[in-house]
Length: 304
Figure (cartoon, one colour):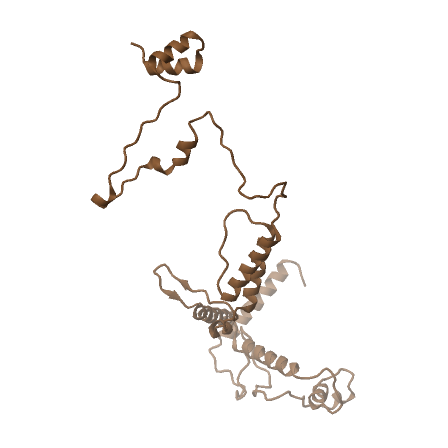
């Protein structure tokens, strides 16, 4: 059997004429949906509880609108008429916002942030209020620790276990280690030098140190300068014919001044040697054999 509500809805929406009137008369509907009546809530005085339905929140919509047939109309609550420019506000609104900002500034509180669109005047008033609070706010005295560190906090370094690393101590230790390495490298260079080379190097260093403190200009009263030129020997000096004692520069060890027999290393005897050869004659035989081989080689090559 067909649904009478469906037939009534189709007849009211899509049919016309005697057939539609007959269907509507038979079903007893006028084509509009009917709403069920809601039972009244029990008395609050009897139980002390009040039950509210969610549909009660929209009483105006139920009474003023029956569905999708009627369109909603937005009415202007203000009594003014005419066109208004977008983004502008009245002078009264601007003065009120400025007064609120000034009152909040005087009270020492911050202006509450307003969500949504704001006009140019409201943004300007908020900016002026922030600047005024910044100027009038008491400046906090700088902390002495930050002043000593130049306004910056020291960075804390830690190792993998979480222990704090002293950067300054590590830098000092690295500098000491580098200086020790340089000292050892300089010491290794002197391992291949003899006493004479080390003495010459020390004398050269001391001479450079003394020259570093002297000026470029030299005068006739400079004793060291005059002594240096007096100790020089020249080939065209007429006094060399009768000078038998050479000038010595500084203290010197005594040495043997006469001739001595040759040896393999050309080592001179001590200054106390009396001229007597007390060896077993090995050096003499060795040198004679060396000279004989040299002469034999020269004869074999045809050299005189």
